[in-house]
View 1 (cartoon, rainbow, N blue to C red):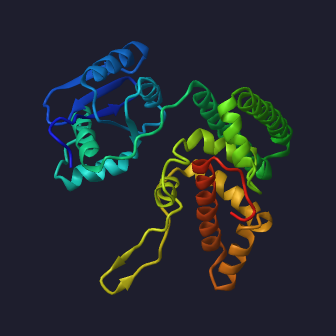
View 2 (view 1 turned 30 degrees about the horizontal axis):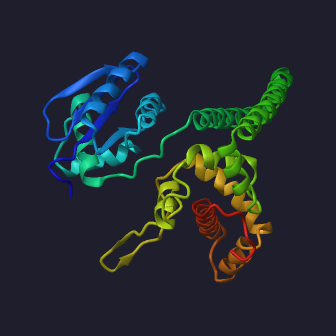
View 3 (view 1 turned 135 degrees about the horizontal axis):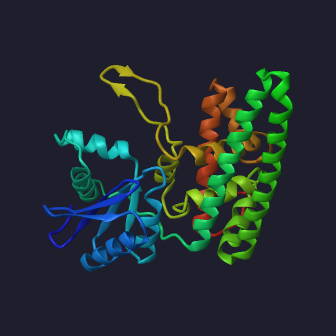
Length: 313
């Protein structure tokens, strides 16, 4: 429960504007979503010193405000818009405007209190940008490969040339990612720690550093739910539905899945676990999901304790 002295803020984010509301206050403010507006927003919140600020994930438009607020040591949490909308409906708020959404976010901050993201350094911001671009290029290569299969001969050469160009661009991007990590002592130490685990390579380790700054700061249940590898119950009365994973951070989960595929064959802790699940009748997809959760739990503990991989872990 909150105390009367605590202040909770909600910020509705759009491409051009940031709408700010404080819990238990009818007043709201609008700022432009540019460096000048974000600076004014940050100065105002520094005066109020809120306990928690909540922003919706809005296609990346929230990142500049998040960086400004977190670097000034303000507690900020970025949440899934669906969670906030469902929360508003549960409270009987069906109307939707930018101002109303900001007040809903402030109320959500007070009641739910989502875990704030750790402050982001400039190096981590650069790494996150490079990893995001890497995913985009990888998707473009996949799309072009699919087009190549059914393309007319007259355009096959052009598509293949584009694939080759994208592959070269991907190699150059990987070199930039490695250079950035090697040039930053903090990133390098964490990167080497993660890569000490069998089957965890450059892409998985860099993705964890860029997209999961909470790694090592949460317990195993919370980190699994955050990434989206925690099984959710679907029971009602006498009916017991199948458990399934949902929500979380899909791009990060994809990188973790590829590492788990390798770990199911080569990691001395994951391989027997995977084999045992299959022996117990689990289908491969369910067994791999359980292995993803186990691998993530181990990496989380390694980061928490600042210890490299130990075969007896």
